[in-house]
Amino acid sequence: MKVLVVGNGGREHALLWKLSQSPLVEKLYCAKGNAGTAKLAENIPIEPVDVKALADFAQREGIDFTVVGPEAPLVAGIVDEFEKRGLKIFGPDKKASLLEGSKVFAKEFMQRHDIPTAEFHIFEDPQKAKNFIKDFSVPVVVKADGLASGKGVFVCKTYEEALRAIDTLMVKRSLGEAGKRVVVEEFLEGEEASYIVLLSGDRYVPMPTSQDHKRLLDGDKGPNTGGMGAYSPNPFVDEYTEHSIRELVVERLIKGLKAEGIHYRGFLYFGLMLTDRGPRVLEFNVRLGDPEAQPLLMRIKGDFLKTLLDFYQGKEISLEIDHRHSLCVVLASRGYPEKPEDGKEVFGLEDVERMEDVIVFHAGTELREGKVYTRGGRVLNVCAWGSGLQEARERAYIAVEKIRFEGMHYRRDIGNRALSRFS
Ligand code: AMP
Ligand code: GLY
Image (tube, rainbow, N blue to C red; front, side, top):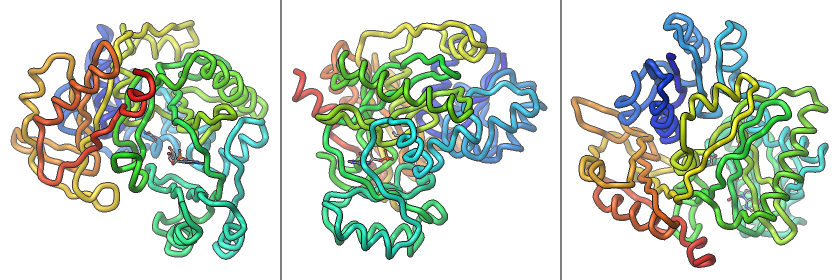
């Protein structure tokens, strides 16, 4: 089979790595990929959001199956375009993708279907939002309605910070149309969990649990990012918690989708805060998380392409999980997430390739005359397996030490909270 993966990041490199293990694969393609995907697939110079050009390419090339990584093409309707042309593609359509494409839609959907989430209010007028915030308790969370690659959420400790967030999003329009409306919501305390399922109509299969590290700096300081590191499994999701996530969140969502006539097929990611009062949904993502996909796919055994195809065709599937733990550290460019630098040569990758139980997934990299250069904010995902979280963590950081590029920075505390709590 010819399989196309859409996207440029570490998640897509990990997907290709996993799919490449399938005996069903004849050739892999990636649009538009990076220096890492180039080793497994043919990189196609088409932007992931150029859905018409991608559908033209898939038709011309006779692609049998397409898997979409990021949210932007899904929200732009890539699945609708492919399906209109009879092309097989794994992901939700434009309507279902609103669960991620609009935080206002997601929050109102949760309210309609009694899915536990933070208390919230929606504003279109910055002055009204500011007046409201003055009487709300702090910390308070301000979120842009539209897509923002994880950068549209401000967790504000003071009123002043919250007022500035409103100005940034609604007056200065730092994120353009995404900040036309905002959600102001209650601050929730607890441990975060990423819970990702394969969903098709009312059938769902949970993937292994994981935890992301959204803040830029150690100790959960600094601004939110797309994610600076992740590991799997997430020990905060015990059996009881998983049961409540399924019952109160996943199953209510499925019922809600049915009641509203929305058909969903693809990965669905629940970003959760595990609070004293039970799980609360922070966000839905209509795809695999990045970097969560990396440690998560490392723990799936067997032929994942066959699994996806069977699921797509409505057959029963079960995922065979590797009981080892996995952990991923993101190496970022100077300036990320605001203004990342580009074009720095990356050194040390060959040393890491020789290590056992370590794998590096590329994100913002490009290949020029046989050398790897940075291209974007999150550059590499250094990942490792271990018999426990501690071992996976140690291995990953030994590998990190071998890699360098100018301005490289990363968090040194991935997995630490779980380790101090559970070991
Ligand atoms: P979101 O994109 O809505 O998941 O938000 C990004 C990150 O901001 C989350 O992963 C949390 O770390 C943080 N966050 C979002 N909403 C809240 C909330 N209501 N309370 C506390 N932290 C939050
Ligand atoms: N790592 C969180 C996300 O993919 O949105």
